[in-house]
Length: 311
Ligand code: G3H
Ligand code: 13P
Ligand code: ZN
Image (cartoon, rainbow, N blue to C red; front, side, top):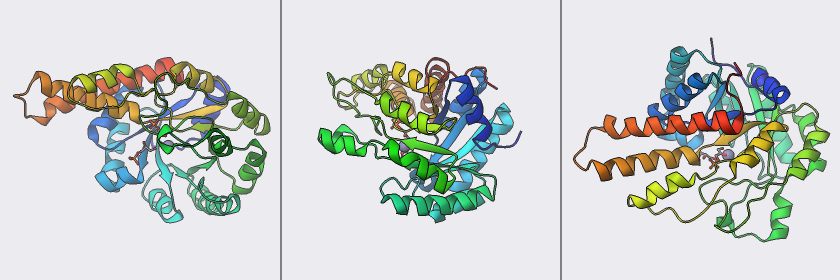
């Protein structure tokens, strides 16, 4: 089967009360780990490429790796641009084989976000590519913001209908308390997601797929392994998995996870070198990393997203 866009995936996910995992890819081992996990779980999956990943690995390598994974697994895979920041970048990805793009105008004033997003939607839809827009800003503890500032960054439900109607986006990323990276909450801080805002948004946008970024749980077992093997991850916690499960049972159809895979990869390689200082064949430590990333993705699909056996 060819690469698919997200339309059918999201329709089924919305109706079925589960979410599709969107995992970031940067190299062959990561692509293989994610798609092998999805194949084992019989689950659709989104492989997403950031501007940084595209720069690191080159567009053509990532597209060819994803095409190889598709031929190898024969599961529904969407190839998605994560956090596109310009029309030109979105166009390059659409022209270069991506089936879904995000245009992230969340930092722009409302009218400018609409204008940029609509320009991308018009081009993308003419090429059968789906588009994710964003309203609201994600913050992290490293941003040192106070509560009233934080409130102002959550997605404003009053804006969502107009944004979706005027842009024609296929899905909308919202800010309800998640944040990017491995330092989301300090230990002892109580993680909270604004489910009231999610509910209000889905009331205003019936049958419309919502996206959550910054959804890694900062898996403590891997933080521990990193730190026991010479690493220095500060004490921090992520989004509790039961909160993500709840969001997936609501209108959230796409959940973005990157940091948990980075942690699993780094932990595996650090531990491997500590245990086998004599090894210097990359297949030894990258192979272990690939196995552990695969197990993390299987766990997310089965226990958090709920997308096992949904093909
Ligand atoms: O949200 C961003 C993703 O984790 C990708 O990160 O821009 O460092 O590739 P990156
Ligand atoms: P995490 O950093 O929480 O994994 O979020 C990834 C993400 O949102 C990619 O767009
Ligand atoms: Zn993101």
